[in-house]
Length: 408
Image 1: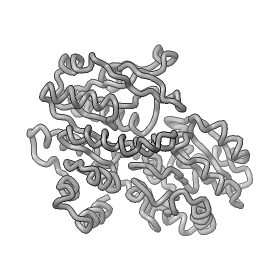
Image 2: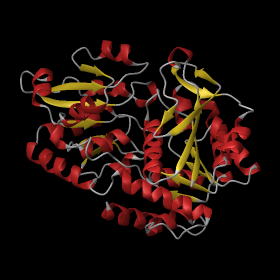
Image 3: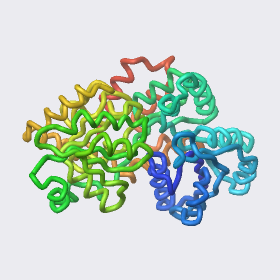
């Protein structure tokens, strides 16, 4: 199978879309398939050192421009050469990762070439735009995104909240495709006593956030837990908000961007993981924390309703409410037995979520769309989601959610 992967974000920029695309490319290689990547070109200063292949797949750079207010993120501008690049590669299927501008160009080109496409909904672009001063464009953005997704043969959404959001916008061929996690990289065994000693010389509990430091992530809410007695706040990641956050949270340990073994150790060494963003379609960082045996405190919103099982693998709090966030973190800090039980349950909850299984699931969707195989081993809840609003009621989707939680 030949797969053209069109992504709005790729290396050297690291985010949830990039991470997922990299895992998809690696799985395609491991299963003997051929892939090509088309992504926005990185900033000129980074192009010399940016990879032009990943997992054996060549990377084509589309013309790009910096996002206003977030220059590290590049977005694609119209590229007339895209149809010719797809025609030359001759894909069997086009995989659209978080399609927006570049994905829209690709879905139209794929239709002209009579090649089916699968769109992966991963970024709440409308909410993202609102956080950057474009709130009045939210409805227009949704109309555009819905048009792109309707043109795809199937849309894959990472959580039930995302499935419902797409159905409300009239996108009907929707299936739930969750995210995988590297169960070797993220494991309780990576807990680092030396790191903990450096970060908490007085034996404090480590309360941490891992992710991009950007406006839409609402990392400023960490101020609500920065002074909890007996704790030390740890922030892992980088982004345009870092300088302001360091000034607002002078007692916190800012570890910067980490990857590989350093990231594994940083996550596993936490006692409580905190997430603050309310517009997550999934939240890979929270799943990585669970795999590391760390209970999660997260807003009761978006994909985090799926990722965090309240009372078992972590606690939910009212979205955007700093007092509620502080209360839930303090609850876990003050109850070591409950914290330990949640840590065990968190790791257990991701036992079947390795990237191999998730990648095979994706290949099943490819085969479905191409008509070259059966349902690919998909569980019943995929069919329920794909049925659309006319045949799938709220009660049916809630039953499917319960089945899904039992299966994980």
